[in-house]
Length: 314
Ligand code: TXA
Ligand code: MG
Image (tube, rainbow, N blue to C red; front, side, top):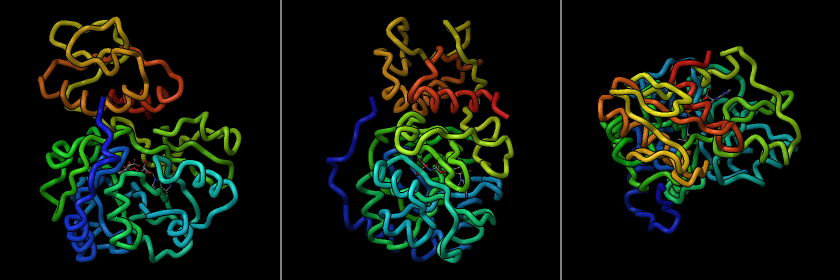
């Protein structure tokens, strides 16, 4: 299982240098509890443009503004009662809220992809919190992978993806959660735009039923087909590998080097998912076959990423 780093000492001097790089419009590799991010000053359109370029990301895909806490978030976005409830319950942590923008200049048009809404999240990782405190303003940070590739969950994977574009890189070890944050829009009816580390059931327990995300890709542009994809094709719901295939098992029935969780534990599987996809891909297999994952709790987010890796979600 991925190691937590909550007890890890924060290197304050490295954090101060990284904050300085952000102020200078440079990019920073940033650990969070979910996945590694590639960070930029959200208010600086040049820095954000550099970020899109480093990721090779279509510029219509808006970014999350990372903030230190609820107070900072409320300076950027307009919170209603439901949003405050969710923030109190899950922040700092792996939940992103899409809300009306309050002060457009704080998160540049480019970071919002021209929308009048903004995605905000207060991450829990101690190094991310230290950087946000040192920097003082909202930080745009998409996952540090190049667009369409699996999100990095280790420092080395982050460096390999977009490290060349970063002026500073903060090592926070392996990401505890291993899956991106859950994205919930609170614009009209609450909507689940991206299943993630906080489960649907946990959110519904706070604010009631979640509507499905619309198929309209403009409202939830993160939901692109073939996303999070390794180089090899991905075959889902596989009972066993075929010749030439790498295999990601799940549960006690599967021997082999890459079991997402031999215990059948969904939290462990989420933490291992992207690192195992990368490890399987590195063996240059004909395809990566993946055992069935139950569609419950965190399984919804795991299966969402796997379907995208396989190119099945439109
Ligand atoms: O766990 C995470 O959220 C990681 C870490 C680094 O914090 N970040 C991350 O960012 O996954 P990114 O940029 O890869 O994903 C942001 C998601 C996308 O699905 C995007 O479409 C959605 O949030 N999003 C951002 N702003 C939005 C908005 N105004 N309306 C709707 N969706 C939005
Ligand atoms: Mg991403």
